[in-house]
Image (cartoon, rainbow, N blue to C red):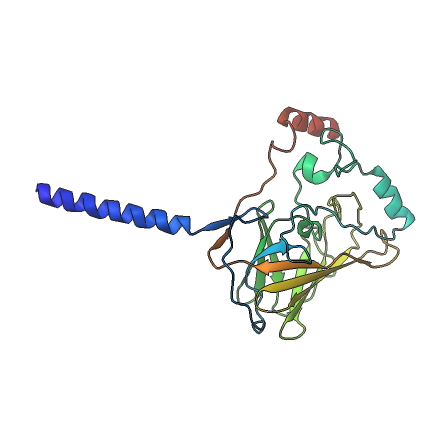
Length: 267
């Protein structure tokens, strides 16, 4: 009987060691990975954007500090009035206790396109009728319908809007989004939008490892002309890369201040 117990104990130790080795191979996304094994580059796969994508600078360094669009848009008088009401928390702006940024003060989802103006990675997976984008920031899950449907005539406002996408060619995928909730800001600088905002995202698979994303915003009420954000660059992470958890919590503001803000705002 003692030999049986010894064998069970021996195999338990082996299984435990194997499980530790398996976990140690997992990388978690936090904007800047500790180590990334180089991937073999080559031509882009045909009509495939799947995988985890990490933000890069144009020269190839990991991007870590972009939370707003660098080039301001041309806005209408309505857009300027809304912008003047914003108290952003960027460098030189308002403190966390004074800002009215809806992401920081109310834990609202960032919306589209602001979800891209953070350094955190995202993952793309497919089903038969839609493309799913999993953003590390705020555990955001987005559905992009690819089954040929059109946008609804009167879309229900959603944090990420109603998105449809299609392949323009074997390496270019375009998403259009409407019905984005007006409570979101376009970026952290505080530019706002109306319910007429349309966001177009153009994904270009440059090669096996690199992706660029161009974002175009059109809003006849808030913008006097289409606003083209800077081109965003991404690098494909290894297959063992896993998204981590980034969520709105008391880390942003003291929770008592947060509750007082909500009580005052609702009066």
